Image (cartoon, rainbow, N blue to C red; front, side, top):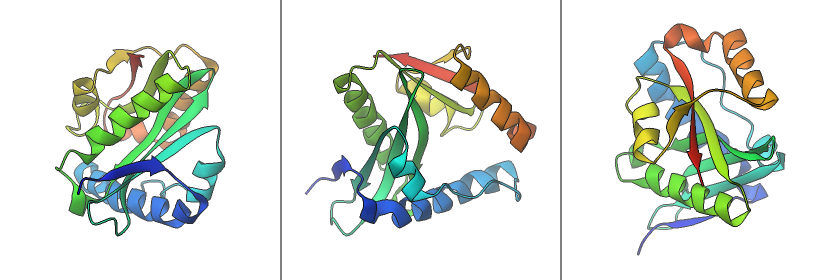
Length: 167
């Protein structure tokens, strides 16, 4: 049996937060960032304009990963991709990105953006392998993300960049 990718529902809200918190722990350890912002609220993710897809493992027991894509300035913005560390290195992140790209195309988006760390292997290098290229923030939303990242001090842990893929 293969994994299932499906739209998230209200009952997934708490598991989204838990998956993100566990996935963030890897990043926090890698960056040495004990004051990292807490995981996002799953209900808020589900209520935001855009979509959230979850990936259930082959046993179907519960979601092991999710991707959250915002509708921002008429473009799709990959806000969050998280996979449980215990389910890592199995291609689940790539499957979620592929599903997000397909869903964005189906919804009529012409591009997808994201913000990430340049040197973390499962960040920019991973997204580059999915077709994303470094780009410059052009829209008010994108420039606002840079300001938010700066106010949170995320740049002290490494170079942040925007990446875009044409759909």
